[in-house]
Length: 203
Image 1 (cartoon, rainbow, N blue to C red):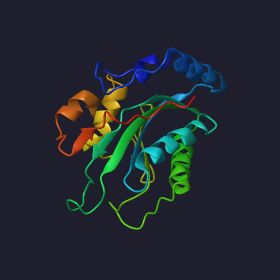
Image 2: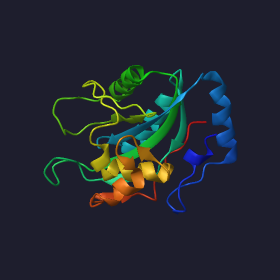
Image 3: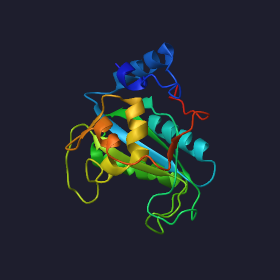
Image 4: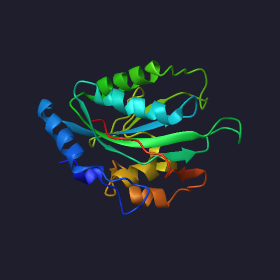
């Protein structure tokens, strides 16, 4: 059942998911065989950021073998690793999916979604229309340079940990510990919830 991941803590910025939507998403699971749970982080700081994040969520749902089970609130974040005010701020969110795709195929789909929104990889930490990062895949721990699991910097990024904790209060990062504890150990400066914005689960 998706309810544990669709509901957030008792925070007014976390919108409850209607039971009818949960039922529809769970019914779609009949197309999946032995699905794995994956956590995907989204970010955008160019163009219509909210529309881009929603488009990425919808594109993931449209992927055969992938079902979006939970969507976090939106956070606005100062750009990471660059000089202050050198780039627009990011909108960030985390989605929980169930998938029958292996990690490398899910990564290929993530890159395809980025490319659909004209992601350009000219420079590290450069501005981008869309980031789609696989944070965790089941309990897999891998040092494959193409896809390191879990994401090697997720444990130190409040813009990943905060929305992840909202969408799954019991979350744990494989090999690192509970997301709540990890979030408590990092600064949340420059990472602010946007209660006026909302992303939706695909219907």
